[in-house]
Structures are given as structure tokens and as C-alpha cells.
Length: 276
Figure 1 (spheres, helix red, strand yellow):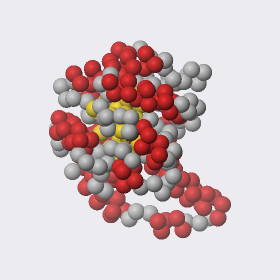
Figure 2 (cartoon, rainbow, N blue to C red):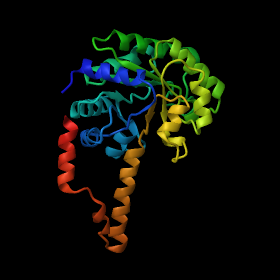
Figure 3 (tube, rainbow, N blue to C red):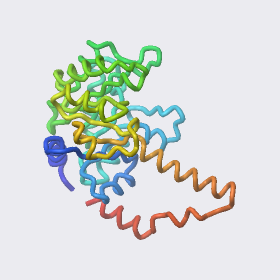
Figure 4 (cartoon, rainbow, N blue to C red):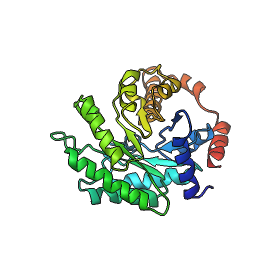
């Protein structure tokens, strides 16, 4: 198993090499091992996938649950892990930065801080506070024994604030405050991706959930993306297959879905391969 320092170096190298890379989102140790066995080079946790796994209809998870999930995924494979820390579960900069240290202690070599508050009435932090939160998180991330790659997320587009100018202003400020990677979930097409990446100097993460599903990694790389994630999409796909099979049994008494299962031997082989 690679050391955390080796994982951190490998993760940073992925962001520095030409082109884009896909960083898929497992939600437990098993799915992490399967993705590693498929040949992916890094993994990212998903708070939505975790909430689905825990049966949370409101998609809410606690900091302790996220850190425990991060630890399980980081220990499952040899791959670098980036952790979805939401808004770092605190409002004040120093309190939010604590989540960065906890994620690093759990084995992650990267993680994100969002500018969403969690309050539907006031969903986005005021600009100056949002920048201060990123600056404090970046200072902590870069002072750790194993440097931690900090991703700063501008959440406007997910909360009805379709203001691209403000989104870019925030991303540029987060870049200046020390964020290593920038992220604006909710981009809907390649033109928007180009518009944002053209305004930034540091690597940009694109999540595919709002894009046309026929969009390819090569197209996103050409538009300036460096890192491509899928958020909770794999979790939702797995749930779709589960529900489809359940309905077939309940409504039709059918077990035809069993013809699409992974063979037991293949599952075991992939789980073993994913550990190394």
C-alpha cells in the first residue's frame, strides 16, 4: 500500500499532467475497490452517495459520518482520495478548517470546501466570509505534514443564483486565496465550461450531473476541464438497477434481472484487485 505522502504526490501529478482525468465517486469500501480494479487513478467520496447508503431522505450527513466514510474509502485501495466535505460543517473559517485536518487524518489527500450555507433562506455565504473560509482552509491544508489539495466550490448555480459573473468572481477570489482546484457545480454545457475555465489559472473540476450525458471526457478536456467527477450519479444508477429488479419481482414475479449480475467469481477477483 502506498503511503499517504505517495498518494498525495500522485494526486498532485494528475492535476499537473496534460489533459483531463476522471475521478469517480464510490460510496463505500466495496465500490472503491471495484473502481480501483477498473483502473481509475483517484477516487472522490460523495456525501449524496453516503446519505443514500444510510437511507437519509433529506440527504443530510454529519461531519463524523463523512470522516468515517472517508477513512473506509481511503483505506480500501492504493488510490488517492478526495473527500466531499460540503461546507466543512461550520460557518466560521477556523471551525470549517478543522474538517480539513480531520479528513487528512482519515487518509484523504484532497478535499473540498463549499460556499453554500445550508440555509435555504440564505444559501450562499457573503463574498468576504466565503473568501476568508477558503483562505483559512488553504492555510491549514498546506501546513499539514502531507500537503492537502484544497478544492474551493462556488455553489451559486445549485441554489438558483444563475449569475455567472458572480460565480467567476468567487472562483477567482478563491484561487487568489490559495485554493488548488476550483469547482462550480451546475454547469450545463461545454460553452459554460469554456467560459469558466478561460477565467481561471488553476485546475478546474467539472461534475457531469447537469451536462448532456453524451458529453465525453475528451470534449470536457478540450473545454479546459482538468478533473471530471460524477457526484452521486453512480449511487443513483445502482439504486435504479436495484429498484428495477425489485419492481420486476414485486409486479411480475420475474427474476430475469439475475442474468445481468456480475458473476460471484468476478466480484471476488475485482475486490482483490482493487486492494493492490
